[in-house]
Image 1 (cartoon, rainbow, N blue to C red):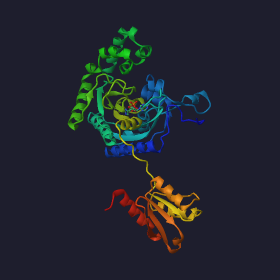
Image 2: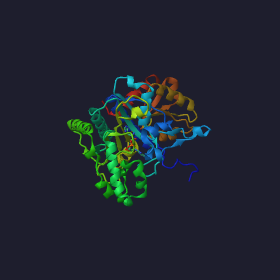
Image 3: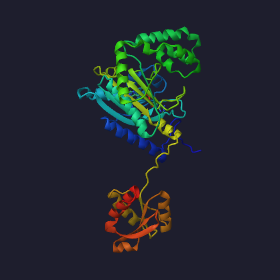
Image 4: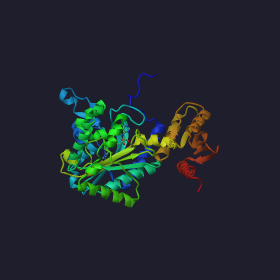
Amino acid sequence: MPRFQAPRGTRDLLPDERAAFLRLERIAQDLATRYGYQLVETPLFEQSEVFERGVGSATDVVEKELFRVQAGRGDAERERWALRPEPTAGIVRAYVQHGMQNLPQPVRLTLTGPMFRYDRPQAGRYRQFWQFDVEAIGDAGPGIDAEIVELGARFYREAGLRDVVIRLNSIGDLACRPAYVERLRAHFVQHQDRLPPLERERLSANPLRLLDSKDAAMQPLIAAAPTITEHLCPACVEHLAGVRAHLDALGIAYRIEPRLVRGLDYYTRTAFEFFPPEVDGAQQALGGGGRYDGLVELMGGRPTPGIGFGLGLDRVVLALAAQGEQPPAPPHVAVVVTSADPADTVTRLRVATDLRAAGLAVRADLAVRKLSRQLEGAAREGAHFAVICGDEMAHGHVQVRDLEAGTQRAVDLADLERELSRAEARHRHGPA
Ligand code: HAM
C-alpha cells in the first residue's frame, strides 16, 4: 500500500468522476443563470463565529463536525477559523459585508464548491463533498420559495435523475416555534427513561433535533410527538398555503412532511428536502434548503428575509449510478501530432502549438519513438486524427490520417487548421 493516502472521508476525483461532476456543475451554472442567479465565491474558511452564530452552536455541524483551522501561534489564533461546512452563512456574511442590502432585492447568488464536515465517513457521507447552492436574499415569499423548490427539482431532472421526491414543511417562526419546542420537550421529557443517551443529551439544547433521529427506539416516540403543523401561527399558516398554491400552479408534486426538521439552526418557515424515490428511513437526502429570515440580522445586517438550497453533488453522482446511468466520458484530444522521424519532437511540438492556438484540442507526441508507436498511442487515446510530419513538409505538406476510418491524405500546411476543424466538426456532428 502506498505510504500516503487521501485523508479518510475524502477521495480523489479521478478523470472519470471529475467529468461527471463537471457535467453537473455546468447544468447547475446554466440553470442558475437562467433563473437570474449570479455566480459568487466565498473563502473556503471563515471566522468560526460565522458558523457558530449562523448555523448554530448546538447543531451537530458546529458542535461535532467543524474542521477548525489551526493557524498562527497564540491560543487566540487557534480556534479562530473553520473550513466551511456549508455556504449559506458565508454568503450571508458577504451580503452584509458588501452592503448588498442597498442593491435591488432580492439578491440572487449561486455557488458550487467543496464543503467540509467531520462526519463519520460512509457511502454518500464524506468529509469533503460538493454542493450546488443558491440563495435569494431579500424576498419574504412565498412565490420565491416555490421558485427555488422548482429550480431544485429541475436540476435533478436535467441531471437525468428520475422521480425525485420533494418533502416540504413549515417549521414556524419566532412567533410560534418557541411554544411548540416547549411542547415537544415536554413530550420527550415524559418518556425520558426510553430515550437513548445521545437523544437525552440533545433534549435540553435542541429538542427539534430529536425528530430527525434515525434510532429505532425513537421512532414510536417521534410518531406520537406533537407536530409543528398543528402549532403554526396564522402568518406561518398563510405562508405555507402560499408556497403550496405556487407549487400547485407550477404542477410540482410534493409531500407535506410534518416531522421534517433541518440540521441547521437558521431556518424559519419553509423547509424542504429532495430524496431519491422509494425513501426508506435510512435514506440520505439528495439536497435540502429553506427559509432563514433571521440570518442576515444574526450576521449584523438589517432584518432581511432569505431562502436557498444546497444540493449534494456527490449524492447525485451516486444516485445516477444506482439508476444505471452511464457517466460521461472525460474529454480527450481530437488530434495527435506525430512525425516520421522518431527524434523530431521539435516539429511535432511546433505544429501542435499552432493548432492549439487556433482552438483545436491537440496533443504532440513528445516521445522519441517510431511512427508506428506514435500512431498506436494516438489510436489508444481515442484521438480522431493524427497529423504526420515528414519530409514533405519541405514542400508545405503533411499527412492527415483519419484514425477511425484508417484513411490518409496529404494536406497543405496552410490549410491544416481549417481542414482539421472541418473534419473534427464532421466527426462530432456527422456528415452535413
Ligand atoms: P444541508 O441539508 O446540511 O443544508 O446540506 C445540503 C446537502 O448537502 C445534503 O442534502 C446532502 O446532499 C449534502 N451533504 C451534506 N453533508 C454531506 C456529507 N457529509 N457528504 C456528502 N454530502 C453531504 C445546507 O448545507 C444548507 N446550507 C442548505 C441551504 C442553502 N439552506 C438554505 N440555503
